[in-house]
Image (cartoon, rainbow, N blue to C red; front, side, top):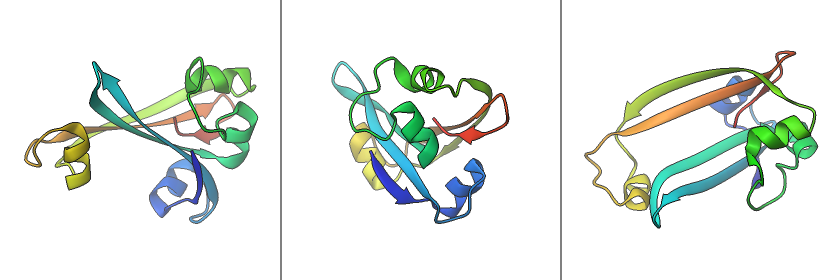
Length: 119
């Protein structure tokens, strides 16, 4: 978990100005000790603080559970799935060659009032 200035693409997805401080959480999902997914999520700081997502470590009950418990129950989600070639770092982390495409799943979750966050 870290606080960073939102890159332009992330800021646009979250409805923020580029450079606005956001919370970035990253982790590797494992199956039998092998990395099968690289996950990265960004949250507006106030959302992260309200839901306890601004703290390091595992989110017990999952992010959507934490958001609901923080009074920010998800209402809508938009997902986009694309494919691309991995970066050298991604290929190394996933234990695969750089010539095998990876799937990228982007999801923007909004509360019932339309507020955006990105788990």
